[in-house]
Length: 156
Image (cartoon, one colour):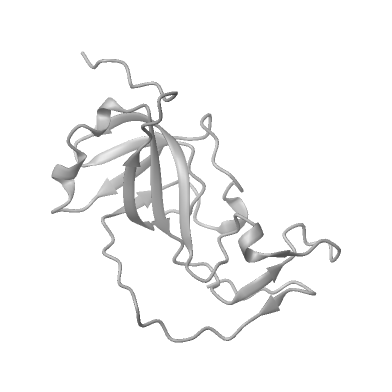
């Protein structure tokens, strides 16, 4: 957990977790090992990243290659969970409540990225558009299915 708190930011005491459990289904591999190097928002022209799916969840990838875009949910395991007011610009002037930001610092640090699927490689997805640290635990994968989302071109 990052311990830096900027001037004017506010913390709360976090109650002990007791009402939910997650089963991580994989691990995300990115080029970024430190938060300072990680992009603030993912970009579809960003670097390729690897989404590794653990057994026994690998068969759940069946058909995912038919989609051009996916929503990935992941656990921001190195984020603070006690920050309620933040100063994202670190300027000491503009403050926002955590729920008004896409900051990784949140009570339940769940990240969400819409990524472009480049290809499926066995038990892994190669994607562009992520903004998380290397080794981030994967919670879920959901296809983007709105009528305006193009399907991936046929393979072969």
